Image 1 (tube, rainbow, N blue to C red):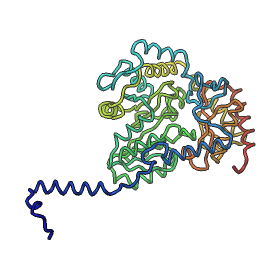
Image 2 (image 1 turned 90 degrees about the horizontal axis):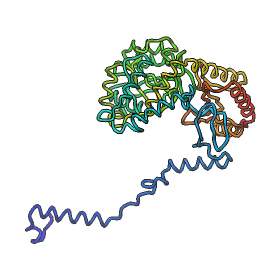
Image 3 (image 1 turned 60 degrees about the horizontal axis):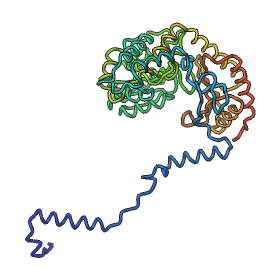
Image 4 (image 1 turned 45 degrees about the vertical axis):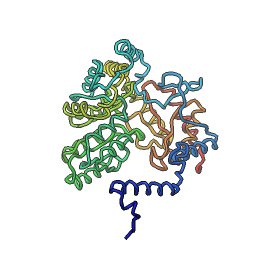
Length: 441
């Protein structure tokens, strides 16, 4: 037993606790704290940042310069002006030439005059504009469903929708090549997320047969056109599978709305399917529709629930009036000029056919304006892109983790405004430069 001095023993319980706390605090202060590594509190010492700098140095050592953030000096269409020079441009999503079209630009200008440049608040509270309602009706009617909701960003549309609708006891089965935004939404949801092999409906069927009964809600996610490969899923079979297993089906049409089908109404028109058979239609407004943002379209109940509860909508400002107006103008112009879609199909098919005739590896691309040229090695893709740039062709490269390892590529986006002359020159030049690449890099 500890023999307390008379002075201590006479202290009250409260005073003893205070004294003990003071002694412990002094003891703790006398012990030197371990040093905190700089990588824990300085951004320029993050290992991830240092890795980025190392990659930039490797590019510089190869004499390739910095191929990123090339500033364009005007409208990005079939041509782009960079550093005072004009290039044939395959680095834009402006599939239908709506960005820069006088009617689309005029619609945005008129909206600025009427509403200003910002919605000014969350739409749920005080940011709702008449033009927002007009836009969402236009999108829903174009797709052929009951209603739609517009978010300020395409990536945020997927993150907040998937993350909000599905929870811990749910299952998300997504195509192995699904976009990052869909994966982030699945992580946010807390649901069990499993990839099925790309465009493999038989594998998806097996996974549902084995797992469906263990979960409450089940979501199947695919894309209308896959943004790195340019191929299209089998929508009729996917609809059959989702009905059989009582699951939800979500189709990300970022690269297929305005592109597939005779009138550009997307993958449902391409296959001649009823749009109501898909539960969640997602699309972006930055590609065929010359704006910025994203949408979810579907049933009235789905859209009403999202408008009142989805965090990325409720706690975000509404899409800006000029952005909303440019989408409305682009959709209406497309309805009067469906030949834009027909020309897009013709030019994309011409590029694909010529590339295959040259023996170039176009991967899985079919019936879409997204055409990869696969070279395998990462640095070869960078070198090829830079060599083409020197010859007047602007095309981005892609390598791991954006695409699988050893599947690095250039990715060509075809627009309705590309000419046959541009395409033939590009494919001939491309074949020449691919032949010059060393076998081992």
